[in-house]
Length: 97
Image 1 (cartoon, rainbow, N blue to C red):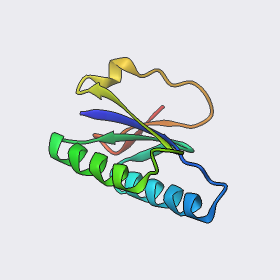
Image 2 (spheres, one colour):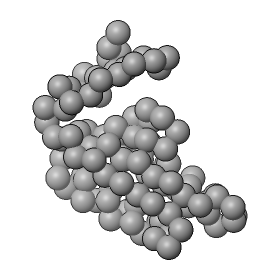
Image 3 (cartoon, helix red, strand yellow):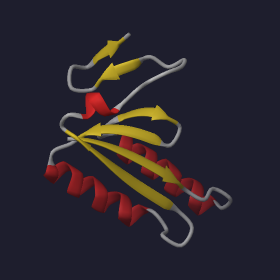
Image 4 (cartoon, rainbow, N blue to C red):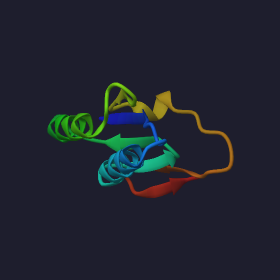
């Protein structure tokens, strides 16, 4: 299923900057960055549970924010893209023009 993961991590402290890097790396390992703090990930339920738990261990819930948007398996009909960055199909690993 397609899951959109967004985050906002406090970066005024060295610890916050470290958490930001860790969150970005964990998301990069599972999906495609589509904006600075936004990732599209195609995950099965086990992969989603693993990534969710990993991210929740990294963030500080007092200062950081983490959101998961569950777009499901028919996600192509739920996404409209406009603008400079070329879209792609993560299930086919090819660009969509």
